[in-house]
Image (cartoon, rainbow, N blue to C red):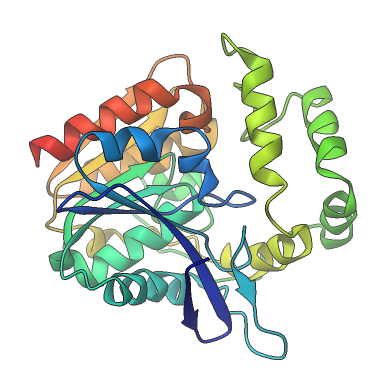
Length: 290
């Protein structure tokens, strides 16, 4: 299996297709590159004529944390992994397709290296690693707090992570799956959505995911001035029912210079799971028009 050696981690990646242009994908927390590949989005994009590289973030999926070293779970380190992966693959310029947590890192990469991006697709995400309706509101004109330690109930989160994936899914379904999985039960095929979600979750070590979260989600600042410097074409996609990211996505749409903003009716946070065909078609159409 292919890996990229990085400080503190060995990053797994998978390649689909042989197109002249490459799409590098990033996923959300608890997920892995299978968010795009298991759902068929990667294959559909490859069929449209691009090469797709699905990367597992640090602490997720098949990526390996190196014992005794700093795992590098800060957003800036994860953003640096994007450039390192592109260098490893010999890519001067590439498309970046992101979701949720991966989108936060992708936007940070674009703030410093937008000239390397043919385009950036940001699905159900925002530019602050701690999404906030208050600081994303169009009328907010105050200062942003400094980075903070996330207010996780660590024992509760850790206890939940120790459960089997099947038990996590059961509890999520009984609790309406909020905030990320709330639209799965209203899908036209909820059993498929839950089955795919369970399969993808099972590929990550939950203890590593918990530790990732404690270090990553620390910044309330959406970095507006830096967003305005991103000159590559941008597509911001949001599921209509993804309450957590409605305002953060609107903020991206207000401040990214070259941006299309699409809200998908009747869908939630897990667009690739909930509507793989529609999601792939939308992204492929955007990439072809860039």
